[in-house]
Length: 145
Image 1 (cartoon, rainbow, N blue to C red):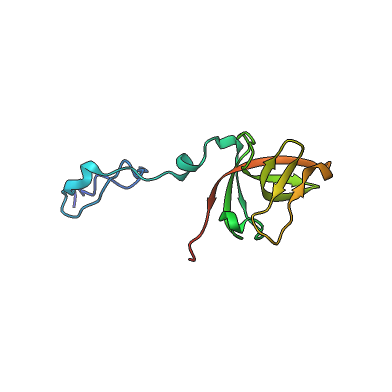
Image 2: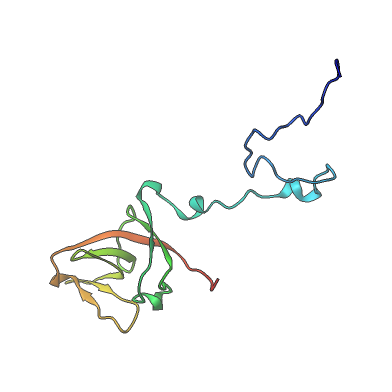
């Protein structure tokens, strides 16, 4: 056995590759003709988060915004850096409680409006402890899985 050499695989699997570095693995050794046209994967952070330090994820609890397409259990992406304007859906703190409502302001007062007829509009003039926590930029809704 002296003088015999053992040859193994040149690559031992110690390097970490990303999806973009390894486009395909093909048993024949030849890539598909469409590999040159393959797009990189979709990065949800890149698509859904505008300002990373100011963005938070919440889970919706309740049905107050169901007519706006926001349902119980949906994931809300909230950006605290987005400017509050009339008609935006927001996360608000009212008397220490987090609420998801549509913000509406007219000439004399401001309201938090639920998108469900079972809930009353909230006139903010009646409350002294009110703060806007952030503006909802996206809603992630599961499709019955």
